[in-house]
Length: 137
Image (cartoon, rainbow, N blue to C red; front, side):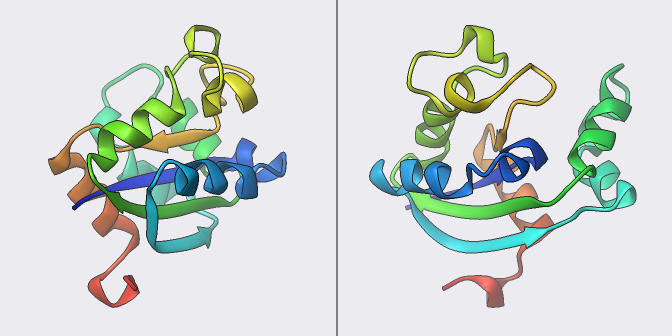
């Protein structure tokens, strides 16, 4: 059993896609082990995306992710990381496969509706940013 972090970004929340996105995860066999609706401060967003702090898009990323509420979820299942990334689609929605979350809901590479961990180590770090052991059911 593998865990991954999945986040519905402010555009997904603002546009009313929470339920449909969660349904896609569940239909694919991923179970929600922990979930939280939260509005990140700029400081929290900066810490979450600290790995990108030297990149030119860092400040735009921080500004966007802190622009409204997000839904953070720890998903679990077999090959949860790969399955979640497949469901999300390519970062750029113009390049995402038909039927993926980003193809169906994202408007741009900057407002691409969802975030998902890319590796086991990243997932552990990202999950611990939002959740403690007592948050899991």
